[in-house]
Image (tube, rainbow, N blue to C red; front, side, top):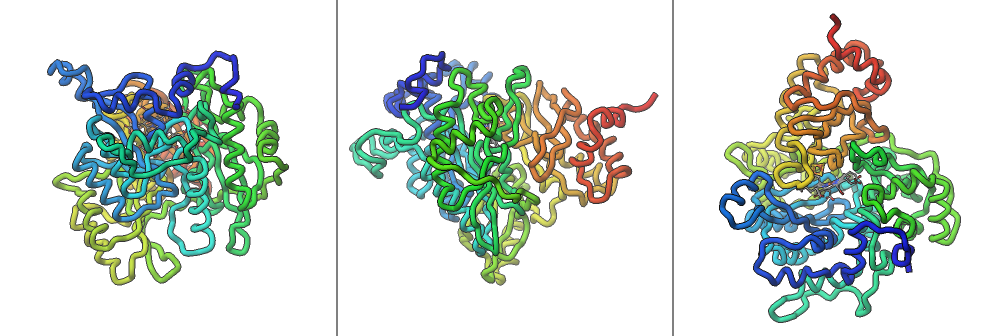
Amino acid sequence: MSQAETTTEKLSPVEGIKSASRYLRGTIGEELAKDSDHFGKDDLQLLKFHGTYQQDDREARGAATESGKSEKAYSFMVRSRIPAGIMTSEQLLAHLDLCDEIGNTTLKVTTRQGLQLHGILKSDLRACIKRINDIQLSTLSACGDVNRNVMACPAPYRDNVRPVIQKLAYDIAMHLAPRTKAYYELWLEDPETGVKTLEGGSDEEFEPIYGKVYLPRKFKTAIALADDNCTDVYTNCLGYIAVVRDGQVIGYNVVVGGGLGVTPSAKKTFPRLASRMAFVTNEQAVPIAEAVVKVQRDFGYRDDRKRARLKYLIHDKGIEWFRSKVEEYYGAKLADCTEDDVTEHNDHIGWDEQGDGRWFYGFNVENGRLYDNENRAWKAALRDICTELQPEIRLTAHQSIIFCNIEEKDKARLSSLIKKRGLPLSEEISNVRRWSIACVALPTCGLSITESERVMPQVMDEMEKVLLELGLDKELFTVRMTGCPNGCARPYNSDIGFVGKAKGKYTIFVGGTRLGTRLGFIFKDLIPLEELVTTLRPLFEKFKSDRQESESFGDFCARAGLEQLLAWSTPSA
Ligand code: SRM
Ligand code: SF4
């Protein structure tokens, strides 16, 4: 029995809901049978473990009240869990069908290599989740207080490295997946006939890793390579950096305790990059994931959800204490990390050879949002490509898509299918736009304070102009925007971060790095959307004139420091 099941400390209300839920059932089944358009408060917490969030279109709130039907226009976000972002053309086509048939006609590629549907009505929820399972994907543990989608570099190089780390992502995802049968009962059994479409777990109800209260909070895992940190490994609760010798993965340097969410008014919360813990062999990689999860399960804070992420436990107790606990749970001492650390970040955009005579193409999807309108038809292009060329699909942590296994003879055809739908080829996109991402925010995200993905294209238009004018358009740096401080597009370790703080206003962070190994700092706060680029312009000008050779924008800002940056940005009298 875990500490959380026996403790007498005051627990946060969500702990009580999980504990009484009978392994994530709550009253979800009863509520699904009702004719209402939404669920009650307690079930909302449990639904997350099943991969769905109840939301309401915040722009439709007024209209819904006027119609007198319900206070809010309720619908559901459904997130598919896709380890290492690896999927088939068929699976992507099925998601496009779902968003057109029962969603809001758009699909989002997420910052953790997942896919999100929005606007699913409660009456369609069971069918939606069942259809995702029918194509051999799952929504179980895409959200909730469990290990979420495991990220890994998705590049389809046919070497002895990428397939190994991608398989590890899958193995960890499977090993840490909840075992409860609730998921199968609720979403995959036919409610009319009681016929099970898929048997899940053993007959005995048991969560060997999580116990009945699961983890104190969400838990995130990613795998990277030293020469390719495209998964931003240091922002995860648990990260693996592959150690490669003579072209073979001999093990991993494990890092723990990263996380970005912050509540600016609560000093006890902060973004944190993971600490390097120990080296593990290939055989130890999965058991160590289990040990890390169990230490967080038993020692993570359950009284205050704001401090319940693993990063706070490690911050408070120290990495040595944490490592010794992991060793205790694992049952043996671990070796120290090797010197290997991340040195590059490849976004895998554009054409590259796989190493088996075929090619892959990284297709830059602006902020991960797939939609069709009269000018740009992302969904139509994907339908054409997936139907005609049937490439294997991979999703990147920068909200984009890789088409794999393209024969030399099909390269031109792929490009023409993209152009035909009014979309830019990746090689036609400016560097600054290519290296930018933005979170969902309005209108679906219940936590958003400002716009994000809907305004980022205009911010990029402006930034492109300024950078071109200054001759800085070839520079490589990351710009990330979020509609609130939760950090879903990882704005705190990018070169530039725009974080929604008040209506129409953002905090500007600078000084992070494209490599993801340094947190930025606040340059200016409460800057209106229309002034974001003009506020940064003096820094770009100084960067041009005063930078050291091959210094990046983030490094330049970090070297200059806040005081100097502020002095440069204030016009002299
Ligand atoms: Fe996130 C909550 C969207 C990646 C930190 N995130 C949310 C919710 C579910 C809002 C809510 O709780 O009601 C958002 C759903 C909005 C919507 O309408 O779809 C949401 N997060 C997203 C996605 C879709 C952003 C995107 O545009 O791609 C990403 C989904 C990834 C996936 O497929 O699993 C997403 N979220 C992240 C990341 C980045 C990452 O993990 O690499 C972070 C920062 C890293 C971290 O976890 O610390 C992140 N999301 C949060 C937090 C802050 C957690 C914290 O420790 O304080 C919240 C709020 C919360 O958990 O209370 C949150
Ligand atoms: Fe919503 Fe905030 Fe996450 Fe953006 S950062 S998706 S606004 S929770």
